[in-house]
Length: 145
Image (cartoon, rainbow, N blue to C red; front, top):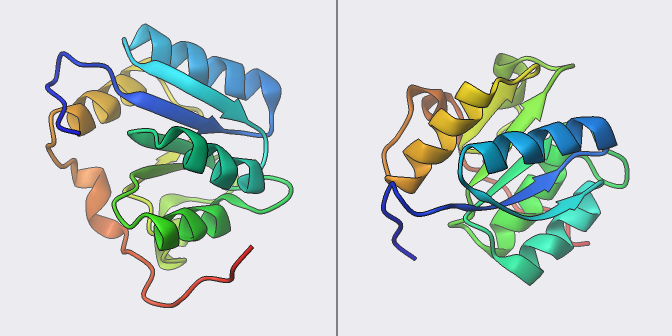
């Protein structure tokens, strides 16, 4: 689906901290994009991705029942065009990029509305942010769930 910058992105949020998930959803909505679902684990993110086929996934790195990197790899194994943004307050971008998650961007918590809006608007207009340059798609197969 081709989107113009004026069209809203359909966003799946995967975050196990409910207050943080609610804040992320509010930020996405205030940026004029749609939240299709909020889930609390990596495993739930994989299933929700299959249900909704969102334009982008915003996923926490540390979650129960499958962490964000493993969920990211599983989603990408099924849909190599998936666009996933990892967020973390515990692990920095350099450590995450070394993990070869396949994410297109890595954002460090706390995240601002301006950051969310910039990333989503940039993705909607099919441009590339400098944020995306360090991450690499996973070269190895991922475990099946």
